[in-house]
Image (cartoon, rainbow, N blue to C red; front, side):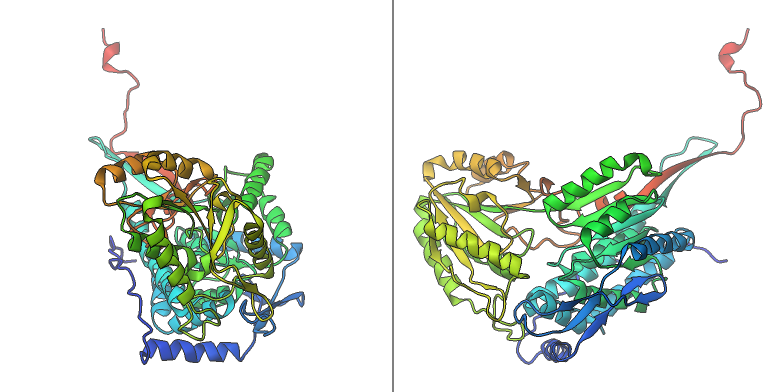
Length: 542
């Protein structure tokens, strides 16, 4: 069979389309959106070459129109979860030994499908079922997902190219083997790109996967599986299941063949999974890889030298895009008193100008939050702030769930830097601001560092380079993604790989070579061309 040392296409970040009025992409996505809205889907379990419909179903509906049905999905029982494990392990026999260039070709083809014929469908599905505006869907479901697929292939080749040196007469080699067993991928509702990347990057490295998407993202997850199938992914490499989360997790983590978990979700859930893995450690054939990105309580801090309009824009974009339902969204801010009036004026004006409603109306800046549970949590936090003598709602504060889970973008100002909404992750369109005395800007950085258990993203604003240097050092452990004079959202694959520490996760940086290294197990090989024929070393001579 002919062989070569292959070069893959150079990865370039996918260009974000404008969706301006009259543009072909706008017409295409809105046409697809209407088609999806006016039809229903019946989403099965994907286990090997079977698409299984159990009859145990849950209704699917848009968060902004919760009386409207767009389909249903089927749930697995324990026997089907066990079947997913055995099917994955059976598929591993061929997949783990498939030449890397063929694995690469599958996911490069998936990227091209998303960039072309599936772009409108993946975006429309994300708009409809997850409540994203067309712009938020484009940068997520299309562009970031495409970037993950293309850059991961490039990163894979860079890993394989990392080889040891060899002495004279010796050839040292390094193999990057797939993990021995299966990997459990658990993905969130808020980013279709994350849902696609967590199982696919693991599979790219030769592993097999049992994937549980979020119940509120399963609609677009179904499109992801369609794309993978069109790209030629062998059956059984990625198995998609839904159902009772606790049962699925317990079953998968109880298997001796469990080799790792790739997780994005809440800190509490991740902690419970880590504990279960620890309890089961003697069952496993290998030490499992535990990779997780969890919560955040992301900050914006402004120095007195900052431009107030730049700060205000970072707050309104960083806090309220996609209803604040981003792990990276700004949810607490520290503003110097000298800038507060100017920042406040602009933030209030910006928020009052927002339009809210269905993503089908592309003039809407925000839509509904994802579930009634999220709605209730946010509404309570807003009401608590209204009743508190330590807080004031300066804009927003309204909510309505009669048609959809609509929470008005809300800004709270507090006199207590440790007020609850300065520390507790809400995951919604609520920003809390603490105004500090200018002279105490160094002290305020200590508050930023110590108020939250998380360390995911954060942003500082200043025109004073000494202050920037001081703040960067003071906050060295406060954020895994740190932004200077920019909002704390918008990480880009290959440019700002994403992840945080502390209670925000293991900081394995999705969108970089660092993450892919977690899904291989190296083997060193030493080949000696002329082996020794006498045990005696020179020092033994008489």
